[in-house]
Structures are given as structure tokens and as C-alpha cells.
Amino acid sequence: MPSLLIRNAHILVTMDGREIASGGLYAVDGTIRAVGRSEDIPATADVVADLTGHLVLPGLVNTHHHLYQTLTRAFPGAQDVGLFDWLRVLYPVWARMTPDHVRVATRLGLVELALSGATTVFDHHYLWPDGSSLSDQVEGADGLVIRFCMSRGSMSLGESQGGLPPDSVVEDEEAILEDCRVSVERFHDPDSLREVVIAPCSPFSVTTGLMRESAELARDLGVRLHTHLAETRDEEEYCLGRFQRRPVAYMEDLGWAGPDVWYAHAVHVADDEVARMGAAGTGVSHCPTSNMRLGSGIAPVSRYLGSGVPVGLGVDGSASNDSSHLLAEVRQALLVGRLTPGPLMTARQALALATTGGARVLGHSDIGTLTPGSSADLIAIDLDRHSYAGALHDPVAAVLLSAPVEVDHSWVAGRRLVEDGRVVGVDIDSLVAEHNRLAADLAD
Image 1 (cartoon, rainbow, N blue to C red):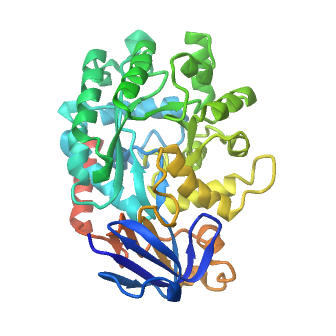
Image 2 (image 1 turned 135 degrees about the vertical axis):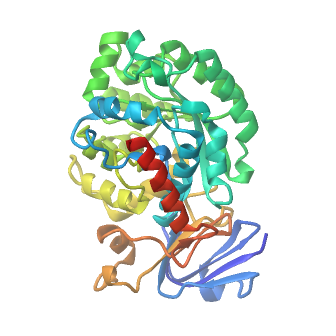
């Protein structure tokens, strides 16, 4: 792998407390060897990028998404309802997906996220109609130099058993567990930028037995665990009625607590539950746009951070966010974080959620900072644009407080992901055309 030299950044943010003017970075074999002022680091490398006038940040980490939902943005009937009714509208539509839908939506969503600053993406995929499988997502990501953390998600509790999803989209539990094992053995390879997480969907779509056995299997295989939890009051009422437990307590009873576990949303969580999550190291993916879009509420992020809970950001699916823009999600987290009790969230605190926070949630010590020993995962934003006119008193705050833009350049493990505002190796016009054709099929 060629060595990489970044030079002359207007500001280079390391996320260990330094913001370096005329900053530079030198990496060998994808790992950062030196960071500092450009004149203080090596002067030559195999690949040299002059980033005069750019802000350089660690690559952003997306900790919760549903890439297949790019096919159902702004879907009629699901625009103005809460979570449970939203799902009832969309389950039958998603049930018509084919392997091609999964493949193309995966690629489109990853490209969109990359252009918004993501270099690491976790995707929660939990329904597999018409023979679709994790291999379709792997194929969709083929050739993209992006860290892709996939999930073998699942649903097994259909309407006939008291669950929310229709029986047509749930699977046999033995088949689920076997495919989880096969998927991890086949595709989990962090050195190749591909990981697998075991991720049953939610308490209202998965049986108690499958939740418990999924946790046991994940620990046997040495991979992480993820699920939706405490997203809405409806879910809280469902858990109290069915399990006589609030959502967090229910999951704790099943072994779903610890530094290898993170929950999506975690909006309706009591103070004592926050304290237990912090003590256990259980993480949270904060999804502010989706929570506002569906009227779910605001996660208690300041209480989480004060209790030591790992917190990252999640764009969430494009059917409850209608975009896959991670930089916009950082801005949203910053703004909504100012509506909750306590000191106003700062731009740098919001940025930490999307970098060091996301890395911690996903169990990575090698991303989220630009420091020696970390992977060379970075993004660069040209500050010479109308969006930032008059805002260069503080460029770091400007890229969050101003309207979100797409990044101009990014690298993952020292390799190009975005160059001059385009994802390397992607014919975006052809991809969008194929995606829209498939999305139209689902709407018929």
C-alpha cells in the first residue's frame, strides 16, 4: 500500500484536543505515523494531497442505518404517522424486495453516506425476502473503500404470535441462528474493512428465546450485538404488557448488556437504567432526525454521557430520515441537544459523537481520531464556498452550524474513497437510474 501525505490543511482536527493550523498527516500502509504542522512531518510520500483551504477531520462513523430503505423514501401513507403505524405501512412493501433491491440499495446508500463524510457504516438489515441474503449486501459494497459493518438481523415474532410484523416477513429461528453463524464465518474480516454483527430487530419482532440465543451465539463467535430498543412509548407499553419489564430491564435479563452491546435510539430510558447502562458499558446509537420525524422523542444524551454510556450517531433508515447525510445528522444532534436540560451542546461535542463516540460504540480503537497509530480514515471539506462566507472565525464550528455540504475528499485506511466530490469507481448516474427503477417496482 502506498504511503500517503496530507499537507497544508487550513485546520486539521485530531479529536485528541488538537486543531492544527497548516496541518499535515503522514501514513504508511494505511496507518498514521505522524501528525503536525506540514513543515514538521515528512515532506514526501507515494501519494501527496495538498489540501490548502480545507478542513480535515477524522472520518465520520455511522452506528445505525437501514440501507434498503433508500427504496422507500417519503413513502405515501408513512409520512405522517408514528413508528408502529409507519412499520405497518412499510412491512408489506419491503416484503417484495429481491436480491437486486438489496444489492443496489446497499450501494446507493453507502455512496450517499460516503459523500456526507462517513468512512465507517453500520447497517442493520433484518428482513430477507425472496432469497436475499448478506451476500447481496457484500456484492453491493464490492469495490467501495469504506468500512462496512453489516448485520445478520432477524425477525421471528409475527402477528399470529403477538408480534408487530406480518407472518410473511418472519423467519424460522433455527434457520436464523444457523445463518448468523455462517454469515460471521464467511464475511467477518475486519482486516478487509468488512465486519458482521448479530442484530435481531426489536422486542416486538423477535421472541425471547431468539434474543437470548443470539446473545449467546454472538459471544461464542466473538462478534458484537445490536438491536432497536426503547424507541417509543408504544414499545415501552408493549414490553410492560408482554414481559412485565421495561425494555432495558427486559434486555438485561436476556444477557443484552455490556461493552459488546449497543441499542439504537434508547429514547425512553429511566435514570436508574442509564446508570446501569453506563456501569455495564452498553452503548447507544443516537438517531435524532428519525426520532423527530416519527415523533418518538429525544434521547437523553447528556445523561448518557454523564453516566459513561458510549454514544454514537446514527442516520437511521432513509424511510424515517429520508436522507443518508451523516454530517447533517451531526448538526441535528447539536441542535436537538440544546433542547434538553443542562449546558448547551457545543459543536465539538457533537463532532465527538460522530467520531470518537461512534468508534467506541462499534468497539474500535483504531478510528475516530487522527493520531499516530490510528487508521488513516479522514475527510476533507473545502472551506472556499458560499456556505462558509464570513464563518471562518471558527471553521470547525462552521461546518456544523452552517448548512451541511458534501465532502470533497476522503480516505479509508489510506486509500481514496472520495475524490473531488465523487466516490471513486462509481458511475453515479447509472446507479441512481437502476435504483429508481427498482424503487418504482416496489411502489406498484
